Image (tube, rainbow, N blue to C red):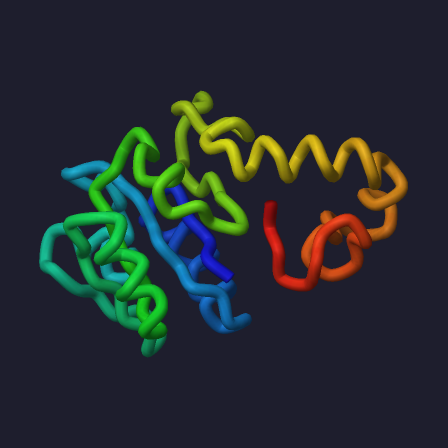
Length: 152
């Protein structure tokens, strides 16, 4: 499962390590000049240095969304300079996590690509509040309207 994480600072890196450990393929996006303070524990250093390792997980700077997908599929974390999240539509991830530490929303929304919009509409139509009260968004595991592993 591909997950895009907006941001690559220390908080985002913690999220990435946790999801990576659970088996997700991770692509992170950040600004060209990252602002992370705790740089030794931030995958944003891959933007500056080309690669970064935190808790034995390696992250590599990638130039394109295709390269990022390949790096993530090899079991590494891919880091893209993409402050606006333009690559999200091309990557078509199963989930997008906003881990940008900011005082206001910097543009993340549920309509960043058509896959997420259709999945969200499907979930609301067929599952509604009862699925949320059962602990989450069960589309890929229990939805009879989609086959196993389908995300939209």
